[in-house]
Every structure is written in C-alpha cells, then in structure tokens.
Amino acid sequence: MSAVEQLEAAGEVLSPAVRAVIVALEARVRALETLVAQQAACIRELEARLAQDSTNSSRPPSTDPPGTTRPPTPASGRRPGGQPGHRGHHRAVLPPARVDAVVEHRAPACRRCGHALAAAVPVGEPARHQVVELPPVRAHVTEHRALTLACPVCGTHTRATLPATVRRHAFGPRLTALAVTLLGRFRLSRRNLTALLAELLDVPAPALGTTQRFAEEAGAALAAPYAEVRTAVRASARLWVDETSWALRGALRWLWAAATPTATLYRLGRRRNRRACELLIGRAYAGVLTTDRWRAYDGHPLDRRQVCWAHLLRNLQGLADAGGAGAALGTWGVREAERVFHVWHQHQRGELTRAQLRRALVPVRMRLGRLLGRALACSERRPRALARDLLRLWDGLWTFARHDAVEPTNNRAERALRAPVLWRKTSFGSGSGAGLRVVERLLTVGETCRQQGRNVLHYLADALTAARAGHAAPRLLPAR
Image (cartoon, rainbow, N blue to C red; front, top):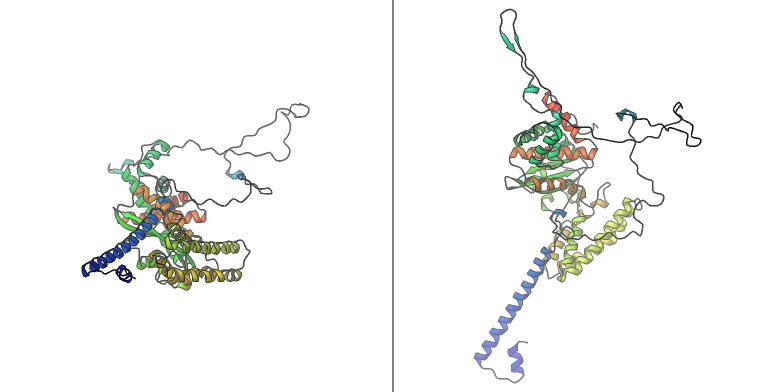
C-alpha cells in the first residue's frame, strides 16, 4: 500500500497538489533504493576483484600481491623429516669409468696393536667417497691460419681457403649452445649473459648482437626437431592445452602450449581463438583434450574434452570469498569440488578402480546439479554466469571418469607455461616475427628434453654441430 493510500485510509484528506508531491517522492525513493542496491552489488563485485589472487581465481601465482597467504596444508600429525622405516636417499656413487682421479688413503698403523701397516696388502673392497669439483674453466681457442704458398713452377702466391664451417663463426657450437641455454632455459638477460661469459671463459665476451645471432642460429637448427614434436603431439591420445600472453614490440601475442607426458609443443600467434588452437593441435585432433573453460576450445567434442577442476575450484572459492547472495553457493561448490579430488586421489592410490570412481562420483554429480539450478535463480550475476558456463560444459566435467589416463586438472599445461611466463616478464617479449619462431623452438626443445631427462645443452650442441656441417639434427623423440 502506498503512502497516499495509507493516509487516506487513516481519514486524511489530501489536496491534489499534496497527493502529487507524495507520489513523486515515493517514486524518487524507489528509484534511489534501486540505485543503492545496484551500487552495493557493484561495490561487492569490485571488492571481490581486488581480493582475487591465485587461490580464488585463474590468476597465476606470479601476480599475487605482497602478503598473499595460501591456505595451510592440513597437519599430518607426523614429525618433520624421514619417517620410521623410510628408505634413505643417498647420493649415488659414480662408476669407475666416470672417475677422473683416484687418491688412496692408507692407515699408518693397526688400530688394535699399533703395528706399522706400510707393507700391508689391502683386503676387501675399499670404502669409496667421491668429491665432485669444477675444474678451472677457460675457453679453448683454436686459431685457423690460411697459409699463402708460392707455386714452384710459376711463382704465383695462393692463399688457402678456410672451411665454411670455420670462417662463418667466431664461436664454436658448444659455446653457442651454452649461451642459448642460458638465454632460453635459464632466462638470463643478454647483458648478464655477456658478463658471465666474460668472467667464465677468460676471453672477450660476445657482443649483444652476437647473442642474438646465437639464438637465430639455434632457432634455424631446431626447425626439424620442432616439426618432429609437432607431429608427435598432434598424434597423441591425450593433450593438456593452455595459453598465456606474450609481446611482440609491445603488441599483444599469445603463447599456446600443448603438453603430453613426453613432449610439449609451443606456438606463438596473433589470436586467442579456435583457429589458433587448431593451428597448435591440428584441425582433426581426435584425442582427449584437457583445458580450462575458455571458448576457444569449444570446437572439440565434450565426450573427448576434460574441463579443469582446479580452475573450477578456484572460481568457486572466489565466489565464496566475494560474499553476498552467491557466497553460500560458492561454499557448497567448494565442498563438492573437494569431494571430486578426494575420490580421484583414492583412485590414484589404487584404492578405487575406474568403475568404482564413476560410482563414487554419482552423488557428487547430483548435488552439483542441484547447486547449479539454485545458482541460475540467484539474484547476483556472477553465480548465474558460472552456472550457465558449467551447464554448457557439463559432460566435459566428467570425462576423466570415462577415459583411462585422463586427469581432472590441466596442471600439466599450466606447469609448461610457468617458465615462459617468467621469461616474458624478464625479456619483455620478442622484437621480431623471426624472434617468435626462435622462442617457440627453444621452449619446445628445452621442455621436451626436460620431460625425457635429456641434457638440453648436449642436444643443442649436437644440433648446432650437425647444422654447421649440413647434416640433419639428431632425433629429439625416441623412435617408436
């Protein structure tokens, strides 16, 4: 009942002018109440954005502000360190073929009677203790001299021609490989690289422009290994894919990563859309794809797509932290996501078979479905948007329960992007299109070598040596 109706019901007689003023004031009050409610919702959303970090959103840990604390790991009740019955881990003794020098130590006298042991014969196996030391590092410099010879018949002077592999390079393949490894894998800046090489090698350091030529030569030498990894990744039965931003002379570019258990492919491009994803994994990729909920991946069938639960858990935690009408729904969702991880870890430990895993997830699916139904009716936009997103991808949430060796998270791809993100922050991206190709290949070869336990420095040196001799680069992946 309006104020005018209440006054008239109480016997008040209102003139038309007074009635009009009261009606206008009532309308004004309703408009202001609506505005206040909208502003309150906007303030809550902005405060929730300010409170976002890597624990309650998809932001990487490198963006966390100072003072961010992660939820503590629940105490196990055990004492720190090795537990009773734990098999100790000790440094392995290197085989005799790898030992460069042997120093024998003899006891001067018997520990019991004191008799001299100078002429005693050793018995049994000696106790071995190895000390690993870095020898003095000094660059090996080879001077190539082109001699001029006088012909004994006509007297013409002829100067020798240096081999092409020598005259085009002032630095050998191993030194070039070391510089490229320090640049790409260990993210050393160009200036720090030249300073380190000058102090380490006891020769004048290569110029900054020379370090760029190192990278370009390595990029050319790794073209075939890069294509080899691309073919293997596109033929893989399972892929973990993610993307992050990059820069080309300040312009936005996107770095894509497709990871398998034994190889990782990187690609840099202009777009963050479906076409860019197809250029990475191929248009006809037929395996299981694990991703976040970005729409660029929507072209892949949901029965062969796994949506990342780690992303979802952080989003639900952010909803719970934001307060308001969606907080209770977020708290409920966090509990259900934690139940998913609980049964998954049981399966990983061998406590549940794949069939038992599917049965254990049935009640979780039912409760999560009810949660999404309530979220759709929520008065706030954020819970409604999350619910619509999850219903759109519903079947993709449970692919890990149907396919062997498929995981509920996209952690493999996220880990593959950590080193490139740190490199981007220190290098500020690339300066040319050719530089983008170099970054792709260095990242691909470096990460693939790491996954296979190979020495990336040795592989780069072999690839550069082969390229300078006009030969094909060594295989990066084991032959099937």
